[in-house]
Image 1 (cartoon, one colour):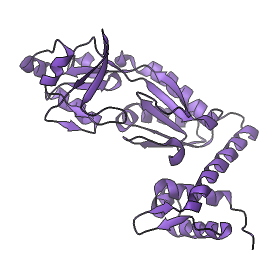
Image 2 (tube, rainbow, N blue to C red; image 1 turned 135 degrees about the horizontal axis):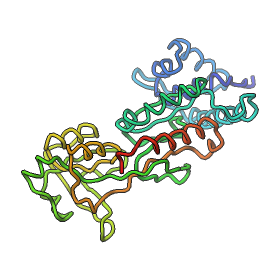
Image 3 (cartoon, helix red, strand yellow; image 1 turned 45 degrees about the horizontal axis):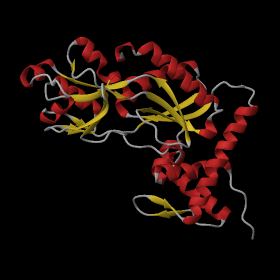
Image 4 (cartoon, rainbow, N blue to C red; image 1 turned 90 degrees about the horizontal axis):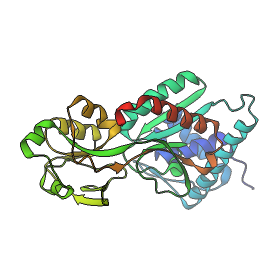
Amino acid sequence: MKPGKPLLDDLNLFCAVVRRQGFAAAALELGVSNALVSKRIAILEATLQVRLLHRTTRRVSLTEHGGVVHQWAQRILEDVSQLEEAVSAKGSAPHGVLRLCTSSGFGRNWIAPAMSLLARQYPELVIQLELLDRPVDLIAEGFHLDIRIGQVQETHLIARSIAANARVLCASPAYLESHGMPQRLEELAGHKCIAIRERDQDFGRWKLDGPDGPETVKVGGPLSTNNGELVHQWAIDGHGIILRSMWDVGQSIADGRLVRVLPQYSQEANVWAIYPTRLNLSANVRVCVQFLEEWLARSHESWT
């Protein structure tokens, strides 16, 4: 008996199970029951006559055949999406699902408000925003767009700078009054510095551009975290020196709650829109990126 042809909806559901690493999480994302997910995966396996997933009580993982099917399913679904855009009577108007991700602090403070406005402007656009403070594999995790602060390493992705930004050194007036203002970069090693572990930052080592080019200093202190909002507040509370983006601390510096330290040093941390090459003609991605670029240009006076 020859295997049948899989349904697009089943391929989409299968990709959701892989992305979410479980039936329950996929069902929650798609708004269906766990039983339906289990049933449709079983039908897909029967249709293709292969086992796609290893199932345990905690998670699922791909079989060898499942990995092949997953790669093809992603390609097929993306091709169908672009076909629909190309022939749609709606022309280039954005509609359907747009999955994007960014870091938690920047997402809450800047991207979420922008997406609220974008959703009002394009009511047929279904926006799924995820805040993730870890490296993201756009293609494997099924994201259309990543809004990232800092360096872009992946050469197989399109990266477009949408806003200028830099990380700067700063501390509270109280801390500097008690511990003194550093005069040279190497003096940071003797200060209390609050380190943060984020997507593209080397934990405990700060590389900055200064008058003599790039320099690196190793820092430490009694406090560290993986949350930028905590770092910001701890600096205001007087616990030490931080290296944070101007999108985060610009207003605190303007208000006098924080003071620039060694202002001749900074770290480039522009805002980038990153997306797979195959989505370069996507109306959803194009409109979102253009909207963010224009919105950030109007909204980030405190960054400079």
